[in-house]
Length: 286
Image (tube, rainbow, N blue to C red):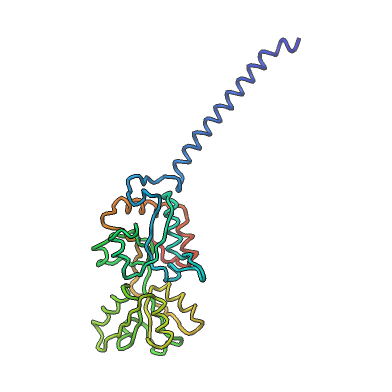
């Protein structure tokens, strides 16, 4: 009696429930498809019109001897540092791999022009002179620091106090330009001694060959800490200016997607985390 009376309603109810389940599953499937399209590393930024990324790789030229911005982990060939982390984050958003090519700083712009790599990311300060030949995507603001022997025996407080002294510096850097500009106001000129790498310039100071050494402030800070008390960095930053990812003037599409990717890294919070990791939160740009 009960089976005969309620059998049909039970079948109808089962079919109704099945239809609801299928409808919900379809809706969830639509949501999954939509999420995939918005995923930062899964193609949210269209790179189809960027010839440099057709091989699925962003090749980055860098002078990897400038801790904490870029350096090799001691005893390895593994690059690390702020620029390394940020380049990896940008590449992930673009959905490509990243490859770092170690190259002398003084030759980076020339090598970029001959397509040795897609971009340069090497603590490169944006300047009017450089901007005549390459374009930039700015990503942090950093000033120049002054490294001196412990106790600051020459009582240096500013770049003007370097007149008449010997200063070591890496060739091709903004610090060379700053010292040359300072010389225009010196009665007794600064003796500017250049080296191929920053560590060599620091060693010249440490061994008494120079009275001071100039580099980007975060770098001088790390060098002072690594000197085991032999050196100290002055509590002043000269002319803070942005670092930029350098791209060829002809790489307009690449520059556009890099700007979009940097925006995405900032929006996700990864940008702030990377700067905090390297004690550079104060250098953030909007």
